[in-house]
Image (cartoon, rainbow over all chains, first blue to last red; front, side):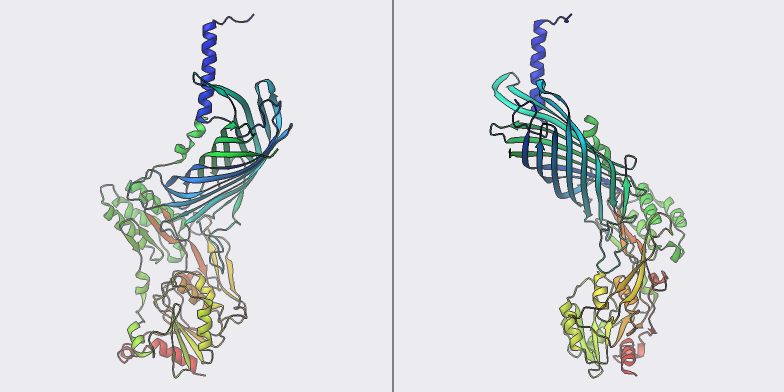
Length: 295
Length: 328
């Protein structure tokens, strides 16, 4: 027996659902993938995307500073994505560079940090669950990633001014896509527009993590051609000593020519826990991406 | 989702101006990373006991800065200091362990026959009736080119020897050590060893890494005749490293006074109030494995400037080097 629903309540619920969906769409909770046509039972496409935006980087490292640093820097991305009836493959590169300042520091602080962030991610995901009637698709599979963060401080700390954490990881990734049609903005009717909402998450299972040695001074620095960075110092990372959670949220506006415009948010949390000098970094990038369809 | 977004605030920490906290951080950092406690026989715990009771938030920033400066001076290390937006402090006492042993005006008045001969960062002239070439290099922060060295070593190639005067050279880039040394090296030569801190213990170091020098390639001018390297107590840091390196070459004689030392490369940290401290973070060991050269590299020929010589316009150290070169 169906529970009784008062017609007025049903109408209110429908309006609330539309408003919620519209609100979510406007504030950017959506997907990073685009469908060639939301009418397909399974989306198939090949996209090349270029993006630009603002990245808020936050750093808490312990090797050469007791200060936390944060700041907004320009960020850029290039992305290749391809979906078949069974798989989704994505190769994405995100790059950001700029200057950070000590967190909540007074005017008498003259410290600054130059930060470079590089994130290469390859996901090969299988379509695990689909609900074509509601245009909902779930993918999961392996991922490999390479992440680089290099930091240099402009303060008087000499040979130990540079720090970095570089990781090469193998792990798991998952994503969900939901295609929607919007014909209202709040209570205002509009021409029907196609959007895609989605989210993805990746987490490394095993990694190799490269860091500056204990004192921030490399063992070959006193040799001819000695370097300030030394990639011979690394450790094996797993869930107990290395955490890297990357979440991507996006809303894509699907154009009639099968290209798309996407507003996306990347949340990349990175925590190294070596024997000495742990560090935490967070990159939160809001960007606008243009997707060009090649299929 | 909210917890993920809130991670930014969870990893960011506000700086602290609490002077006790800043002091603790400074003391502990040096305790764990400074590389010469054992060599200098410093009781760093005693330093804590001596200074910590005097630290309080009622101090002015100037007073607190002075306290930190006096504390790091206990290390007696020219690579140690404190930097704040209003002041910088470096330990400079390393060159007071001996005589000055250098008088620039005396050299200008009595040895530079044509004052102003300069190639790159080098001042130079011929001495002892053109039997000896004299090259002065007073600041490793000033770079030079291979062409500069090619010119000088060609100009003085027919002399009996070359004097390289690095007195009063406080150091700078260690790249200059290799660029210079290889011009006088006939064979591949072991110059020194180095090791870095690997943990907080005062004696936790990596295995020593050897530093070798190859002779300069044939496209560059080399000099295998007699070379005298002039040093005094103000030869510090990379200039001391040059002394430690050149002394391993069989054609090089170090003349003058023991250098000021300062072989440990400086590193540093930012304190919770934004100030910085810096100090030596590794050890350079001689070929014999000894870290003692941190306190200075002794000359092969120890000689001080004599007062009566100076009154007569004579640089005793230069004259000793000329004799060493021109005598058979």
